[in-house]
Structure formats: C-alpha cells, structure tokens
Length: 247
Image (cartoon, rainbow, N blue to C red; front, side):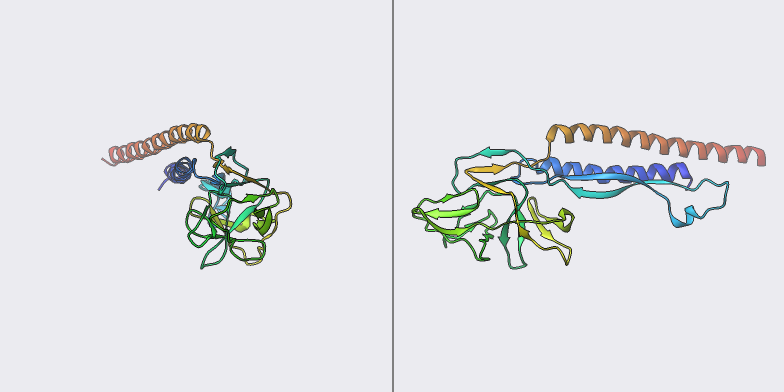
C-alpha cells in the first residue's frame, strides 16, 4: 500500500473513533453527572520507519494519541426532589457494589424499600463510616452542605464525599459511574465539595459543540476518502503507462 493511501486510511480510522466518541457524548448529554470524553491527535512513526535510510520518506500516520475524560462540572439544576443531590466542586459520591466501590456525580438518588439511600441502579450510597445510609422512609430528611443527613433535627449519617489526586486513575463504568483502575489510587475526603439538596448536575457534554465537531469530522472524512480515490487513480494510471511502454 502506498504512503498516501496508508496515511488516508489511518486518518479515516482515527475519525471513525472520534465519531464513536462524539456519538456517545451526544447520547448521554442528558444523563445526570455524565462526563464527556475528549481526545488528542498525534503523528505515529513506527520504529522501522524511524530507522529508514537517509533520503527516504517514511510513512507518518495520524492516530488518536490520548483519550481522556473531561471532569469539569456540569450545570446544577433544581428538581425540588429531596433525594436528588448535586456536588458543587470537585469530588464524587460513593456507591457500594458487590465488585467494590463505584464513584459518581449522578446524584439522582432514591430511598429503597429497606430505607437505604440508593442510586437509580439500586447501589447503596455510602456514608463516611463506610456503611449504607439508612433513613426512616416515613419521615422527611435534610442534608447539609457537608453531607450530614438530618431526620427530626438529629444527625443520622453523613454522605461520603471523596476525590482523587489523579483523575486519570478513574475509568468509566456505564454512563455516570467510575472505578479506580490504578493499584495505588486511593480515594481521599473531598476538600471543597459542597452538597446541594434538591438539585442534580447535568452532563457536561455540550450538544451544540459536539454537533459542530461532528460536521467538521464528517468533512474531514470525505476529504480523506477523496485522497484514497486519488491515490487509487494514480496507481491505476501508473499501471496503464507501464503496460503501454511494455507493449
């Protein structure tokens, strides 16, 4: 395969990956606490190409070098629902699962049949004592900015709020959950997170921006397809010319 076709094919592959990423961002734009994916591009030179003889032109291919999660805060929207919690500032709620803790900013919670404060997926929301938060479902409750849960004016629990020194230690699990993947990644108490009851944080994926990028990527995709067509046409003409000379 000639260098023009190889470079164009690599560019198309990178754009397909970007299209998948943007489509996922758009699909989850309305999910509470969703964090969008971003990417950066780089030019790849294989070790073999880097050691090519002087005077030759090695193939340099465009690839997605890094895909990362944008943890910037979304908009806090009032819902009037006492079980909805939003975080203002850096940090995560902790959801207890049989496979270990998950971390989320999607605070659209509910009170389960057993009185546990739960996520919509029925994971128990963890308190600072490491246990589920138990409530009397027959009584109203208030939650202070520091996560203290009050019923009848008395504290009954405190919502655990944690953070990570390196956000790169987290990987996505579903639309708005994260899991720590680095062995030395430790959750520490969030320093400046503030709980706001009766609100949820919207996803930080900007639909208009993603739609504009989709249009740009599609135009680039079309240009790369034309480049492959031109390369194929050049190769065909070369073969025809050789055939003429040989005859």
